[in-house]
Amino acid sequence: MTAGAVHRQQPYRIRFEWGLDGARIITAGADLAVVVDVLSFTTCVSVAVERGVEVYPYRWKDTGAEDFAVHHRATLAGPRNGGGLSLSPSSLRDTPGLERVVLPSPNGSAICQELAGEVPLLAAVCLRNAAATADWVLAALPEDAVIAVIAAGELWHHGGPGNNGGAGHNGQAGHDGGLRPAVEDLWGAGAFLAGLVAAGREVFTPEALSPEALAAAAAFDAAEPALPELLRGCSSGRELIGMGYPDDVEIAAGLDAASAVAVLRNGAFTRV
Image 1 (cartoon, rainbow, N blue to C red):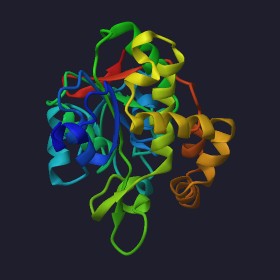
Image 2 (cartoon, rainbow, N blue to C red):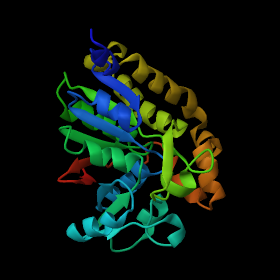
Image 3 (cartoon, rainbow, N blue to C red):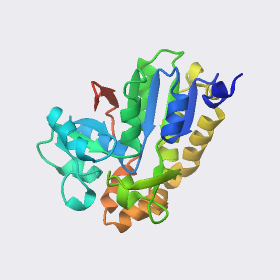
């Protein structure tokens, strides 16, 4: 077996990796890519599609983002500190009259934009819709489907550890570093993977999952009894709470609160 096949986690059909580089590797030959960015991109997508709002992923808010939003007749989300629509689940929940939104983020949104033309199906998963998405996979995908699950993580930021106040949760440029594995994304990915295993379908037995995927499912199983407290206490949760967004952390902690599955169609996430 070649090194490439090993890192693609072949011959396992259910795979798990981190970040954009990991996504590029394990999505080769996949039928479905699942992107997880709990704080906050995929939670925002979940909240939006529940309302019937279409969400266009975009790499980050640069000068091209405005033209992209105009082209799609969509509202462009701004920085959290701007007081309006932003990469904030509560703003997606509370802003009236939304139909289409462009939601920049250098983490989950950037990965989704990159994969959009590379995989047949792309789903945005968070703790809120992990079980619903697992149920949809069991109902809609063939038994031999290859599923690549990507935890987005964060990017280290100029000037110190963590970029959530700059790039990660505001969706702004300014990042310069490598991947920061964010534990909340491990839990979100694990919730989806654990949902597949719990369904008991023969094709999703543990033998179908790579050791990496099994580890993510185990991490979720360990965290589930105290998930809201752990989400508030993890680095990303503490940072958002410190920035004045405790409601966003509470929304993200709503395990299985959403029945809407978010799948990318024609460049936008819509409700399934």
